[in-house]
Structure formats: structure tokens, C-alpha cells
Image (tube, rainbow, N blue to C red; front, side, top):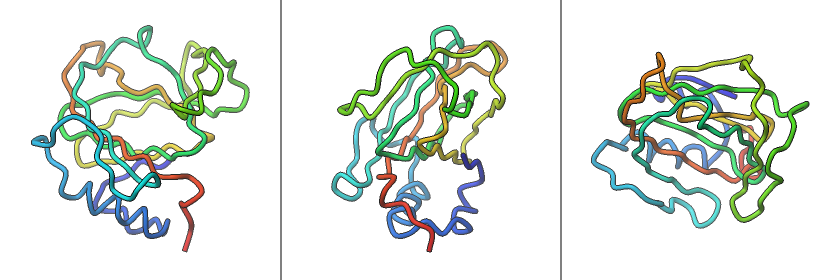
Length: 157
């Protein structure tokens, strides 16, 4: 997992697709329409979504195998609970079409992050994450971009 300011993305030398993702994110604004935006064939795409944050009891704990998530809020604030994948109990087996596996959520997360606009968070295949959570037990509207970058195309230069 990485959490940092978008302006610091260049300190992570993860290759051409990483740079393409952040070219898009540097110009992304709340005026973007919801939906999928293809940035590089099937190797890099963005999903834009507006929703209300929710209580932890309504959220799902997930991992991905083929894609790395780069999550950025365009508006609002949301909490995310983060767990190491190892040792979690699977609640829904891996679905290749959705590139997602879901887990039973332990009572407390070892890491809770509050994401705000201007920051990014990256989840690698070993990072189980529960996004979309309320901050201070209050549901609020958010707009988020989730970049999906093929994990096998992410490289250190």
C-alpha cells in the first residue's frame, strides 16, 4: 500500500503506465462523468463513480489479483480499512471477470486511512481493502476515480 499526495507520484518509479495514470489524475476534476475511461487498452483504465459513504457493516473487504488499484477522491472524504490479505477468511471466492475476491472483515482494522482530494492510495494484490466508509460515523457524498493498472505491467525502473 502507498498513500501520498498526487504531486509526489514521481518518487515512485513504476513505469510508463504509472505515468499515464497520473497524467490523467492530475487533470481529473469533479466535472468528470461517471463511468469507465480507457487509458491504455485493457492494461490501464479508470472508473469514475459518485456515491454515499457507508457504515462498515455495509461495506466489503476485497483484494484484486490482475490489477493494482490507484484510488483518488475528486470530492468528499472517505475512510478505508486496510488489512494484509494473508490470514483472512474468504467469504466470496475469486471472480476472474470482476478481478475481485471478498473476505470476512475482522472487527478492527490494523490500518484506517482517511482519504481526501489531492491524495492517492495504491492497493497491491496483497492489500485487502474496505473502501467507501463513513468518516466520523456520518454518510457523505463522494466522487472517486479508481484507476486499474495491470499488476504485471507495474515495474520498478
